[in-house]
Length: 361
Image 1: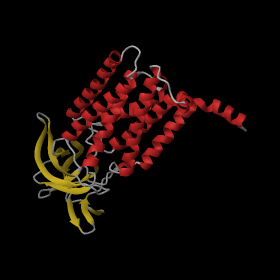
Image 2 (image 1 turned 30 degrees about the vertical axis):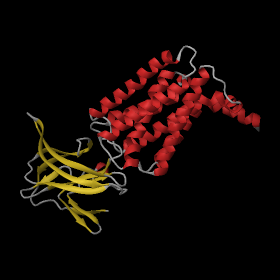
Image 3 (image 1 turned 120 degrees about the vertical axis):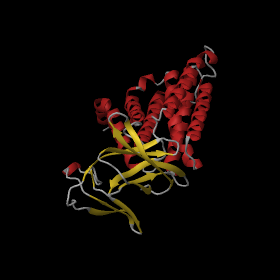
């Protein structure tokens, strides 16, 4: 039986990375439900600490440091352990950041996470390179602390991101200093390219953040729609709209919006934020003009309270709209885009088409 299992393993070995990658990603997608879950965050913290410890061990071994007997036996699996921890972190980031991604702008950062997640499967034989490890570890630290700190401190915004970046750089320098402390060619000489990689990664991610290309985790737009009316009731939010005729791909809100004189357009949103967090948000109403581009028509501000699984619900209203292409951008108080709702306003028919009423709970 043992001989058969070994033979089966050798035949299937080349497919194992794909299988483990697929199973791991599906598992994370099903189990990582809330970005403010204490258990999930502690698991990711353990992954991050474990990654730092493994990097120190691998680098010290490369510099000739001796290992305990038990560690010596496990040495052939050290790079696999680093790859597993990176895969677990990138997989979790893809799940969490996907929920905060605005597909009009911050999708590029999300696609970068996907590339790193898939690319990690082919990096096994290069994970002994200190420079590559410095880039990956610093990026992982920033991506993790960008939502871990706001969740733990019940605060969001630029100062939390900057704090995450500073802590990540300090942690990265500590890890690689410990790993290269006995470098045969001199720790300072080995640390120079590593330092450039750490600071370069920090600078690149910070640049993406201030270019509004990093999703505003841990805040996420959970639901949105355009309606003829939105009314808050004891059972939830009652919305009325003319249903689309696009069959299978029909939206559950009104697009195009059938406008008649006297009508108002309502934008409903549900925005998730972790428990204990209050965040100012804006509904920015704009209309497209061929000569001027997008022209802002209204800005409605209100505050959301975190903690509700389905997101904090709210709405804004716009009167005196005219036929054309419209957009409502949902932003944080700092102007970070949570999402965009694009729709078209067309003249309504007479008599008006029948509306449906739906309750959003």
